[in-house]
Image 1: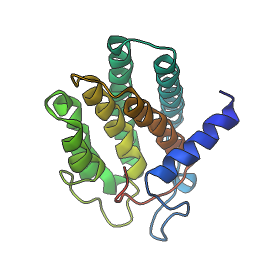
Image 2: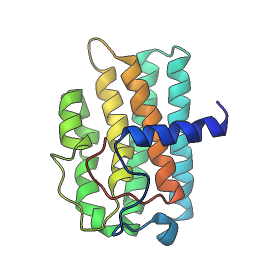
Image 3: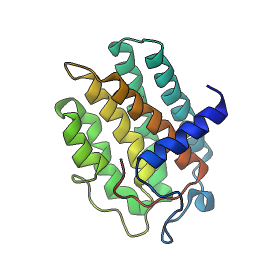
Image 4: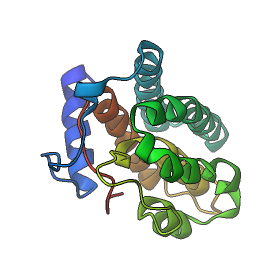
Length: 185
């Protein structure tokens, strides 16, 4: 798919999350503060890996290969989150709690992940004005894909949705789109 297609897919995926296209007034944009060059490069690699995952799924990759790729994304998110917290210290507790899913996903069903991590039921509130939403989803979507791939009957379309969406979240974090954490996917 051409880069324009990925941008369009990203916009559509973010819209599917239920987020407004305009940042809330109290939100601080990464376009103002900026992540380190290393974190920006990691986000670029993350988005490319997420796109490669979708391409592999579309090409018929088996569940073992998709699991390996989703785990690699989950591992990469654990490297990105601490740098993100340096920019947004108000996200520390929220994102640290979200990172716990890395050790727990295999014991969780997709519905529990949806409630506790996508909808934040198991996560502490971020500080007022802290922009945690997209960064959290860098962790949560690969974990959801892993949980889906771990089901007796794998819903490959749902797995694809999770990973197409996570590429959009990585792009939003990297480009400095500011959204408050909230009630999205």
